[in-house]
Image (cartoon, rainbow, N blue to C red):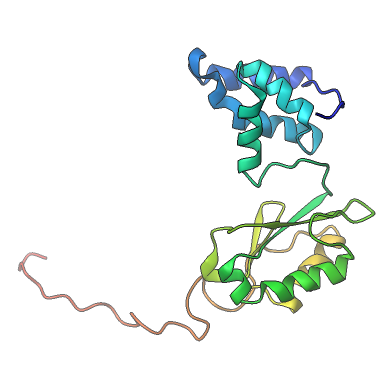
Length: 200
Protein backbone atom coordinates (compact mmCIF):
# COMPACT_ATOMS: atom_id res chain seq x y z
CA UNK A 1 0.00 0.00 0.00
CA UNK A 2 1.38 3.40 -0.95
CA UNK A 3 2.22 5.84 1.83
CA UNK A 4 0.79 8.95 0.13
CA UNK A 5 -1.70 10.53 2.55
CA UNK A 6 -5.11 11.31 1.12
CA UNK A 7 -8.13 13.17 2.34
CA UNK A 8 -11.05 14.73 0.54
CA UNK A 9 -11.32 18.53 0.51
CA UNK A 10 -14.01 20.19 2.61
CA UNK A 11 -16.00 20.96 -0.54
CA UNK A 12 -15.78 17.30 -1.56
CA UNK A 13 -16.97 16.17 1.88
CA UNK A 14 -20.12 18.21 1.21
CA UNK A 15 -20.46 16.39 -2.12
CA UNK A 16 -19.92 13.07 -0.33
CA UNK A 17 -22.84 13.85 1.99
CA UNK A 18 -25.04 14.47 -1.07
CA UNK A 19 -23.83 11.27 -2.76
CA UNK A 20 -24.43 9.14 0.34
CA UNK A 21 -27.92 10.61 0.81
CA UNK A 22 -28.96 8.93 -2.46
CA UNK A 23 -28.43 5.43 -1.07
CA UNK A 24 -30.05 3.52 1.80
CA UNK A 25 -27.83 3.44 4.91
CA UNK A 26 -27.38 -0.33 4.66
CA UNK A 27 -26.19 0.03 1.06
CA UNK A 28 -23.59 2.82 1.35
CA UNK A 29 -21.16 0.71 -0.66
CA UNK A 30 -23.36 1.41 -3.70
CA UNK A 31 -21.70 4.85 -3.69
CA UNK A 32 -18.20 3.47 -4.37
CA UNK A 33 -18.21 4.45 -8.07
CA UNK A 34 -19.25 8.10 -7.54
CA UNK A 35 -16.73 8.38 -4.68
CA UNK A 36 -13.97 7.00 -6.92
CA UNK A 37 -14.90 9.64 -9.52
CA UNK A 38 -14.75 12.33 -6.85
CA UNK A 39 -11.28 11.21 -5.71
CA UNK A 40 -10.07 11.12 -9.31
CA UNK A 41 -11.50 14.57 -10.04
CA UNK A 42 -9.67 15.90 -6.99
CA UNK A 43 -6.27 14.26 -7.58
CA UNK A 44 -6.25 13.51 -11.32
CA UNK A 45 -6.02 9.80 -10.47
CA UNK A 46 -7.07 7.49 -7.60
CA UNK A 47 -4.24 6.83 -5.15
CA UNK A 48 -4.49 3.64 -3.07
CA UNK A 49 -4.86 5.78 0.04
CA UNK A 50 -8.05 7.26 -1.50
CA UNK A 51 -9.43 3.72 -1.82
CA UNK A 52 -8.72 3.18 1.89
CA UNK A 53 -10.54 6.44 2.70
CA UNK A 54 -13.53 5.45 0.53
CA UNK A 55 -13.69 2.03 2.20
CA UNK A 56 -13.85 3.70 5.62
CA UNK A 57 -16.57 6.12 4.43
CA UNK A 58 -18.81 3.34 3.08
CA UNK A 59 -17.89 0.79 5.79
CA UNK A 60 -16.62 -1.97 3.53
CA UNK A 61 -13.34 -3.82 3.03
CA UNK A 62 -10.70 -2.02 0.95
CA UNK A 63 -10.71 -5.05 -1.37
CA UNK A 64 -14.31 -4.20 -2.39
CA UNK A 65 -13.26 -0.68 -3.43
CA UNK A 66 -10.16 -2.04 -5.17
CA UNK A 67 -12.11 -4.63 -7.18
CA UNK A 68 -14.55 -1.93 -8.31
CA UNK A 69 -11.65 0.37 -9.20
CA UNK A 70 -9.83 -2.28 -11.25
CA UNK A 71 -12.97 -3.39 -13.11
CA UNK A 72 -13.45 -0.05 -14.91
CA UNK A 73 -10.93 1.45 -17.34
CA UNK A 74 -12.16 4.98 -16.58
CA UNK A 75 -10.27 5.06 -13.28
CA UNK A 76 -6.54 5.90 -13.23
CA UNK A 77 -4.00 4.39 -10.85
CA UNK A 78 -1.32 7.00 -11.49
CA UNK A 79 -1.19 10.64 -12.57
CA UNK A 80 -2.04 11.27 -16.21
CA UNK A 81 -1.41 14.07 -18.70
CA UNK A 82 -3.75 16.92 -19.56
CA UNK A 83 -5.17 14.85 -22.43
CA UNK A 84 -5.85 11.12 -22.02
CA UNK A 85 -5.81 9.17 -25.28
CA UNK A 86 -7.52 5.79 -25.09
CA UNK A 87 -7.01 3.60 -28.13
CA UNK A 88 -9.08 0.47 -28.67
CA UNK A 89 -7.07 -2.46 -30.01
CA UNK A 90 -9.85 -5.01 -29.83
CA UNK A 91 -10.81 -7.11 -32.85
CA UNK A 92 -12.93 -4.67 -34.89
CA UNK A 93 -10.51 -1.79 -34.42
CA UNK A 94 -7.48 -3.97 -35.16
CA UNK A 95 -9.03 -5.32 -38.36
CA UNK A 96 -9.74 -1.75 -39.49
CA UNK A 97 -6.24 -0.35 -38.81
CA UNK A 98 -5.86 0.38 -35.09
CA UNK A 99 -2.21 -0.80 -35.21
CA UNK A 100 -1.34 1.88 -37.79
CA UNK A 101 -3.21 4.53 -35.77
CA UNK A 102 -1.42 3.42 -32.58
CA UNK A 103 1.97 3.57 -34.31
CA UNK A 104 1.17 7.07 -35.59
CA UNK A 105 0.26 8.25 -32.08
CA UNK A 106 3.41 6.72 -30.59
CA UNK A 107 5.60 8.24 -33.33
CA UNK A 108 4.00 11.69 -33.04
CA UNK A 109 4.13 11.88 -29.23
CA UNK A 110 7.27 9.81 -28.60
CA UNK A 111 5.57 7.63 -25.98
CA UNK A 112 4.38 4.05 -25.69
CA UNK A 113 1.15 2.64 -24.19
CA UNK A 114 0.90 3.51 -20.50
CA UNK A 115 3.28 6.46 -20.76
CA UNK A 116 2.88 10.22 -20.44
CA UNK A 117 4.79 12.78 -22.49
CA UNK A 118 7.58 14.63 -20.68
CA UNK A 119 5.60 17.88 -20.79
CA UNK A 120 2.65 16.08 -19.10
CA UNK A 121 0.33 17.00 -21.97
CA UNK A 122 -0.62 13.51 -23.23
CA UNK A 123 -1.09 10.05 -21.73
CA UNK A 124 -1.60 7.05 -24.03
CA UNK A 125 -3.66 4.10 -22.81
CA UNK A 126 -4.79 0.88 -24.48
CA UNK A 127 -8.38 -0.07 -23.66
CA UNK A 128 -10.82 -2.80 -24.50
CA UNK A 129 -13.85 -2.23 -26.69
CA UNK A 130 -15.17 1.35 -26.72
CA UNK A 131 -18.52 0.17 -28.07
CA UNK A 132 -18.13 1.80 -31.50
CA UNK A 133 -17.11 -1.26 -33.53
CA UNK A 134 -19.09 -0.20 -36.61
CA UNK A 135 -16.96 2.95 -36.92
CA UNK A 136 -13.60 1.41 -36.07
CA UNK A 137 -10.81 2.22 -35.48
CA UNK A 138 -11.73 4.38 -32.51
CA UNK A 139 -9.74 6.60 -30.15
CA UNK A 140 -11.32 8.35 -27.18
CA UNK A 141 -9.59 11.56 -26.11
CA UNK A 142 -10.80 13.27 -22.94
CA UNK A 143 -14.12 11.43 -23.24
CA UNK A 144 -14.73 12.40 -26.89
CA UNK A 145 -14.95 9.68 -29.54
CA UNK A 146 -12.91 10.02 -32.73
CA UNK A 147 -14.00 7.33 -35.18
CA UNK A 148 -13.08 5.93 -38.61
CA UNK A 149 -9.49 7.01 -38.04
CA UNK A 150 -6.55 6.81 -40.39
CA UNK A 151 -2.95 7.91 -39.86
CA UNK A 152 -3.69 11.24 -41.57
CA UNK A 153 -6.75 12.00 -39.39
CA UNK A 154 -5.14 11.04 -36.07
CA UNK A 155 -2.12 13.21 -36.88
CA UNK A 156 -4.43 16.14 -37.59
CA UNK A 157 -6.33 15.55 -34.33
CA UNK A 158 -3.10 15.42 -32.30
CA UNK A 159 -1.87 18.63 -33.98
CA UNK A 160 -5.07 20.39 -32.92
CA UNK A 161 -4.78 19.20 -29.32
CA UNK A 162 -1.14 20.33 -29.23
CA UNK A 163 -2.38 23.82 -30.22
CA UNK A 164 -5.09 23.67 -27.47
CA UNK A 165 -7.83 23.31 -30.08
CA UNK A 166 -10.38 20.56 -29.45
CA UNK A 167 -11.13 18.97 -32.84
CA UNK A 168 -14.67 18.03 -33.76
CA UNK A 169 -15.37 14.56 -32.32
CA UNK A 170 -17.23 11.83 -34.19
CA UNK A 171 -16.72 10.20 -37.54
CA UNK A 172 -13.54 11.40 -39.26
CA UNK A 173 -14.40 9.96 -42.69
CA UNK A 174 -17.07 10.99 -45.16
CA UNK A 175 -19.45 8.19 -44.35
CA UNK A 176 -22.67 8.70 -42.45
CA UNK A 177 -22.30 6.91 -39.11
CA UNK A 178 -21.93 3.15 -39.51
CA UNK A 179 -23.15 2.98 -43.12
CA UNK A 180 -20.91 0.98 -45.49
CA UNK A 181 -17.97 2.98 -46.87
CA UNK A 182 -19.54 3.18 -50.33
CA UNK A 183 -22.91 4.34 -49.00
CA UNK A 184 -26.12 2.43 -48.45
CA UNK A 185 -26.39 -0.98 -50.10
CA UNK A 186 -29.89 -1.84 -48.89
CA UNK A 187 -33.09 -0.05 -47.87
CA UNK A 188 -32.57 2.62 -50.52
CA UNK A 189 -36.30 3.15 -50.99
CA UNK A 190 -39.26 3.22 -48.68
CA UNK A 191 -40.18 -0.34 -47.69
CA UNK A 192 -43.22 -1.77 -49.44
CA UNK A 193 -46.09 -2.69 -47.16
CA UNK A 194 -49.46 -4.11 -48.10
CA UNK A 195 -52.37 -2.03 -46.76
CA UNK A 196 -54.46 -4.23 -44.55
CA UNK A 197 -57.01 -1.64 -43.46
CA UNK A 198 -58.53 1.07 -45.61
CA UNK A 199 -58.27 3.70 -42.85
CA UNK A 200 -54.46 3.50 -42.70
